[in-house]
Length: 183
Image 1 (cartoon, rainbow, N blue to C red):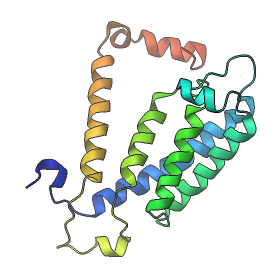
Image 2 (spheres, rainbow, N blue to C red; image 1 turned 120 degrees about the vertical axis):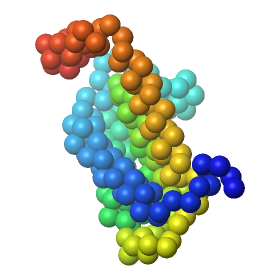
Image 3 (cartoon, rainbow, N blue to C red; image 1 turned 180 degrees about the horizontal axis):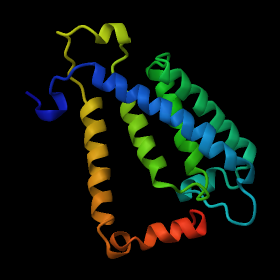
């Protein structure tokens, strides 16, 4: 009953997805995003992803951006270790999402996806690895189906967009390698 959103699944699935997501987010925040944080807000271009954010905080600086990322990375690391609870997961979602929404300097699509997945992880069951080893235990909840559906939609869209002639010919990859990653 309840269709795929309430289908029983083993608790290891959402646990591994959430812990893997938190580990990847730790790397994303600390290794990829922090290295560019010092240049944040340099120059005249600093437009938020949504007009409301520009109105609330017209000129965020590098210190705010770096602080949000460092805090998000700490919470994500705690999540990867299994130390994050629901309220802290909500705070992690807010910190990370606020960080990338502050400016169009950071407009990579995977940040949108990570925010969606972090939102779904808030509702993942808070079980330990030991609790997940019980073979008879099955869970019903929306977090795992939402994870799977969101990732499925993103990869279907990606597969369709990569079927364009520019991608199929290899022109996009050649340009990326020649320009050092800039499109």
